[in-house]
Image 1: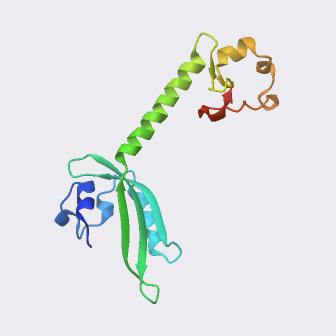
Image 2: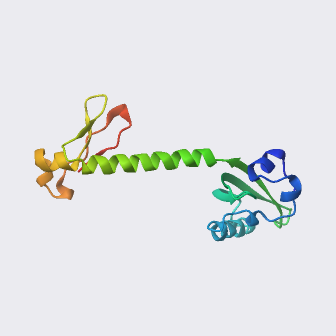
Image 3: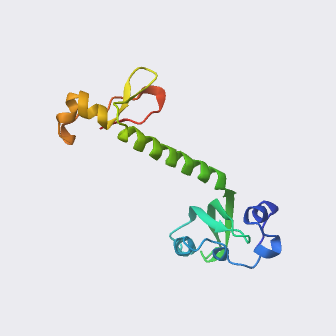
Length: 165
């Protein structure tokens, strides 16, 4: 196995700490079974490339999320010789996605539970989202069954959620 300095930095190990050790030994325990199956699939002739987001753990216990693109190099008879993997640290991107998800969840919870009627209006003055309180009190649509409701209006270019009720 050969590794470059960037991989050593991602995993928080020197070259000696990586060479000769199976990557599954660094995989977070919750990920090991899934990734083990993916590598087994990659060893078969049916799968040629594997793309995964994988949670690893550094020697000091820190989590490191990586995006790994792996492929099997085979000989002329189709026998697996070795794997080649391209690994990118995506820990920061995963943290941002989780923060965005949590913020959206908090917003929707507060919006839906607000004691007053609220509407989220896009820049093109198109209603993009209406709180349940508003829907219950002011919109004739609220009396309709879910399947009889009109679809939510287009939120325009504002990139806002498209939901009513």
